[in-house]
Image (cartoon, rainbow, N blue to C red; front, side, top):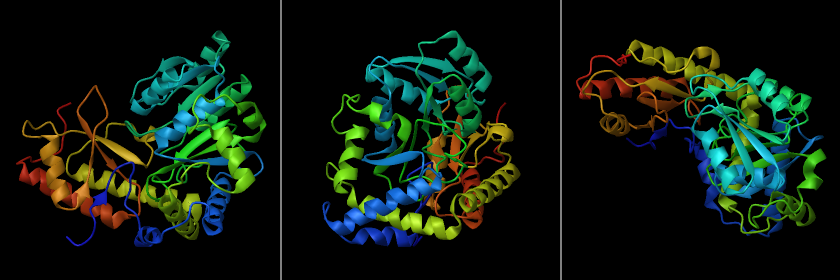
Length: 372
């Protein structure tokens, strides 16, 4: 097969040739041309959430998790109390990093097959006045749940609590409008729905809380307030930037805008999702989630009930045919995941379904129907 393998994962993603080619040039980290690219990317990111008047955006080197950790450390005072709404693996990661940074952390658990509950959050905030901040994962890709951002934001605003949103797998695809949705910080990354390459996160911070963030972070490299102040003053990154990642993201954003922005990206991903669901159902596969709470980002499928099924064998067979699947992230049942995002369309999703059908055939499995 001449083409690269297609990544049906929640990131890194399949990228376009134009995005790959953008990385063929070397850039000086303090050079004015590179500073111009950084400034252009920051302006473009703010436009995506209509946050020009209300928020600033601070880019940060590293994977998305680096930026989540940086946001919590920068936004939450040392004596703050964070409530993490937990319905999956990435929620648990947010709770762990919050605790490791010495902030008081309470976890409010929900079933991984359900959304978090704004009503339960309201009750919790009314009962515990010590909570200062709430952490929400917008799209919990452990199972693929689309959590109710607007409703959670409204509850936090009513109770005067700061909201930190991990929008890693949703930003630029699912609707987010800073004019309507109040949040203190929102975190995303280059290698997700913008279809850039991994290596850079970015955090939107509400201007009203920005000044109070000075000196809160116990980390030098992850202090978003310092990063912001330095970048505003000099146009440069404080420490060596991921230059190739930044210019690839600039190119990816240009393609995002040409496609029609967030509504067009959501439409394509939704079409990918529908193509996948229809194709997999023909093979007997059953999605783990209720469609009403499923984000068109990544789909968790129940594993086939056939005793001959083995994920590693299944994965290797699909991979041989050019498609990279993703293991399940759930503890209660055996599953696997298929992403719907990246520089792909319905044709690639149909091809992926065909590869899955052949993988089942290789394993002597007649149907993807689960045991349950």
